[in-house]
Amino acid sequence: MRSGLAAALMGIGGILLSFGTVILVLTIFARANDWRVQLPAMGSVATGSLVIGGVMFALGFLLGRVGRRADARSY
Image (cartoon, rainbow, N blue to C red):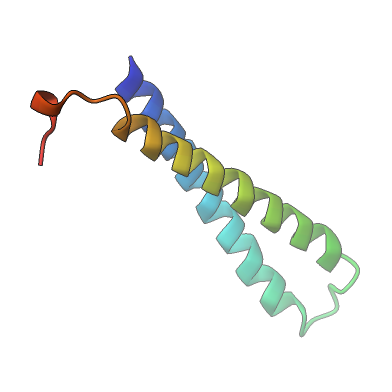
């Protein structure tokens, strides 16, 4: 059960990290266009997505690593 939860956290965290990165790139390119009104909202969504995705990915990684027995490790 723990490995399934860890995999889910890492998967959703990776998706949110990718989503935040795409929004951040769009925000950088939008500075040159007439989208200046939407830049604060895009920046806050990108930052929130990156932070939440990073936390979820790290929690999933740590949950997958912590609590393993020494004989059950796979290298």
